[in-house]
Length: 307
Image (tube, rainbow, N blue to C red):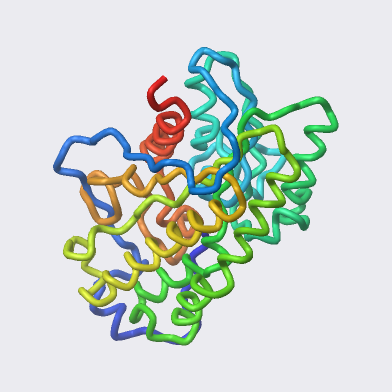
């Protein structure tokens, strides 16, 4: 999800932040990392294809920057603008499964339309998935994270840093969009993926909670009201995705708790700091290497829970 600073001046907020680069320092976990909690499949999901830990799998990963591994160079050179990382969590998941193959089709900045339309010079992701099938690559699992860019989640975070959350019409529009338009877009997207790979398990992987809790004032660039608003929007994205997955008949994997103790503004964050200027803007608020591993572990735990 891309961050863009609002066009108008925000001098008062910048002085309060006390930084020139609009850099929000990330800080560290004081408690040991706990095993990630994962949710059950969404109600209405299709019959699961049984998998075992020692079974080589073919995994295809679709979606946006939260699947491509944004911020974690090096990136694939054949799709440089998509920032497909060597340490993206789908690839880390594959490394835990001996002999498995991972096809990473996710692209940084992708929206739901990127599944059916070309994006950043790359084929539509569902088209690329179908091409793999035509070439004899038959996925056991297809994962997808999508929707955050449709909702303008990144620009909303940016406006919170430089001014006030949900002060502008854009931010309020994001909330309304998540409630009213996003559910249908997600359901259609998930159904399209399911139709393209009917014999695979389709896993909708939710976004992790990236902000401290509503009662935690660690992030000094948010006041109590803003904190509640941003945490709420993060939660709403997850809730809407889970419901849409259920209606589409696919599985939902929650990664909400994977960054517990390591969220933004902790002293050992598993997320890149929020930057609004310079080369670090695309990585802002995305999982770093530890965060990518935590998400991979969560999906692994979901797939093989009890096995």
